[in-house]
Length: 284
Ligand code: MN
Image (cartoon, rainbow, N blue to C red; front, side):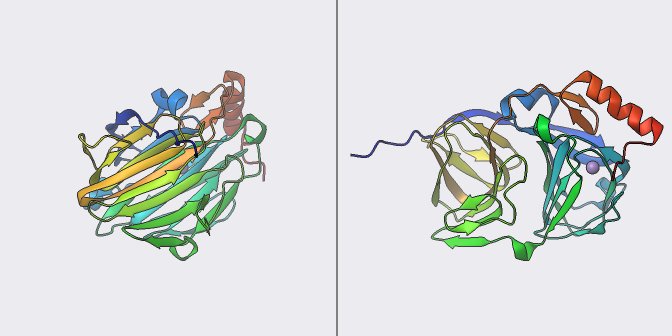
């Protein structure tokens, strides 16, 4: 007899709040400052979904980051970016940009007018030992993301492993599982998970049921954080279900957060802002 895996139950459902950030971009901050304990190692999730370019084309002009990774994934849209390392490019439909700010980067992220801008930006914390690592950009094109076809499901593997599929990255610092899961109406999908890892999803379309709950349907544009456990179970409602799944081991380290910079202590934060004033922020 094999042991029955413990199914991850719902810990909380998060809707987030409408906010304006950058030079005037309307977005939904799904998780943020008040959630860092529960969502560790994830710091922030911003969601974009707009058919009105006025909501987003003002963009995020030049700004610094240190101590984190930003992971931008677009289901549809077009974000032009450039940075202090000399990188320049566009994030397009189905593409992901994995940016390690490390010791410091200056960049700008400018969404271009498109039929629909639908996507997310995740902030992933860096471990204390890697906060000041070398900055790096990783452009992950749609073609680099394996899309695993199964009965009733298509699973995009952006980061980590899923079955036999290896994602475009594993996460160099925090090993991260990042999946884009699309389920046909009424189909069920299960994922074996590491017991202690933090796991949450963000529903981008449709609605579904989770764990053993067959009563309470959860609709799109909400995040769901799950309790620890060995098995994640989702079932699509009648209109189908598409969600992004994020999982990683908690860091359990102190967080000192100042705008675009996230360090472990107040002193490190103050140092970062002094470096910006002194012009020594970018180390190369
Ligand atoms: Mn940024």
